[in-house]
Amino acid sequence: MANVKLTNVKKVYSNNVEVMRDINLDIKQGEFIVFVGPSGCGKSTLLRMISGLEDISSGTLEIDNQDVTQVPPSLRGVAMVFQSYALYPHMTVYDNMAFSLQIAKIDKKEVDAQVRRAAEMLQLTPYLDRLPKALSGGQRQRVAIGRAIVRRPKVFLFDEPLSNLDAALRVATRMEIANLKESMPDSTMIYVTHDQVEAMTLADRIVLLSAGNIEQVGSPLDLYANP
Ligand code: ADP
Ligand code: ADP
Image 1 (cartoon, rainbow, N blue to C red):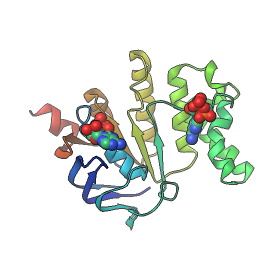
Image 2: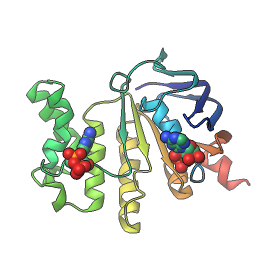
Image 3: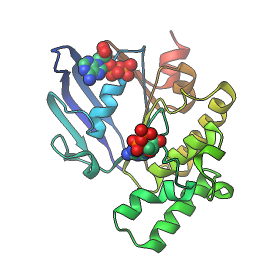
Image 4: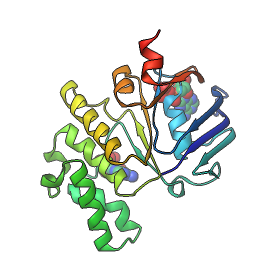
C-alpha cells in the first residue's frame, strides 16, 4: 500500500545506450498502472528499476514517500510477477507459495494463513498439494501471483505475466488479475505489457512509452477512445 514516485529518472546501460531519458511519474496508492509500448521501448527496464533489480543512473525513486533509490530489492516492499513463472519444480503449490515466508522465518501459522488466503483468492485451494508439472500454464501463473501475494507487498509489479499463455488462458488469467485488483483495492499495481487489450481492461491509468520517453499518460478512454 504505497505511492510510487519517479523524479527525473534516467537509465544508461553499460554500453552507453540511454534507454530512459527523463521519466517523471506519480503513481497513487491503490492505482493500477499499465506501461504499454512496443518491444524495446524500455517497459521492462522501468519496472526493473522500480523493483531494484536494475540501478537507476540518475534521478530518484520514492515508494511510500521514502527515497528507495539506494535500497536493495528485498527491502523495498515490492513483489514481482515475471513472464515465465519460475516455479520450483520439486515443490508443491503450497510450498512454492510458502517458501519466501519460510526462509524469512515467519511463524508457521502465519505462513499457513497467508498461503490459504492467497490460494482462495486465486482459486488454487484444490491444487495446493500438486506439483507445478501437474498444473496448466494459467494455474502455474496464478501460483506465481500467489507467491507475490503472500509477501503482502506494498506494490505489485507484473512483467508481461500473460504473454507465455495461449489465448484462452490469457483471457482467464487476465480476469483473475482483474479480480485481484478488486480484492486488494489498496495495493498499488504496476503492470507491463505490449498488449492494448490488457492495458484497456486492467488499467486505471495507462502510461504509453516510446523509445525511453513517456508519450502519453491517461485513462483507457483518454488514450484509445478519443484518438
Ligand atoms: P521493453 O521491455 O519495452 O521491450 P527493455 O526495457 O527490455 O524494453 O529494453 C529497452 C532498451 O534497452 C532496448 O533497446 C534494449 O535492447 C536495451 N537493453 C535492455 N537491457 C539491456 C542491458 N542489460 N544492457 C544493454 N541494453 C539493454
Ligand atoms: P535450472 O535453472 O538449471 O533448471 P535451478 O536450480 O536454477 O536449475 O532452478 C531450478 C528450478 O527452480 C527452475 O525451474 C527455476 O525456474 C526455479 N528457480 C530458480 N531460482 C528461483 C527463484 N529465485 N525463484 C523461483 N524459482 C526459481
